[in-house]
Image (cartoon, rainbow, N blue to C red):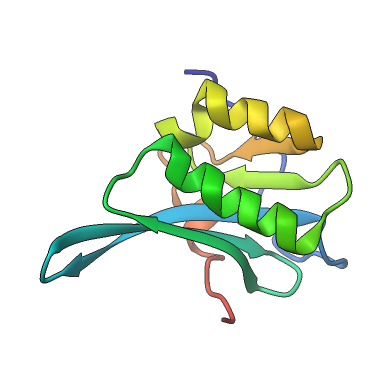
Length: 124
């Protein structure tokens, strides 16, 4: 699957809202099994601006979270979207969503998930 360059390059201090969003997926064990949670965080405010939860970890999970953020915040074209190299983020469907909204994709370096996870602390 295609890998985007690491445009964020660990520059986590952002001076404006809606300039850089980061995303990741985590899982939550429940009595009924695993649930997967995809979140989108604005690096400037550290606020969750989009999220999605499902019993599966498919592309639709991350697309739904990003679409919530886009609908809620209406960022200008040129927004930087930084994630790990997961197949959901590298999928054709996800790349088409980014293209449709004029969003530039950025991915962590190979084997370096901390590029994203170290900055996923958020305010609900």
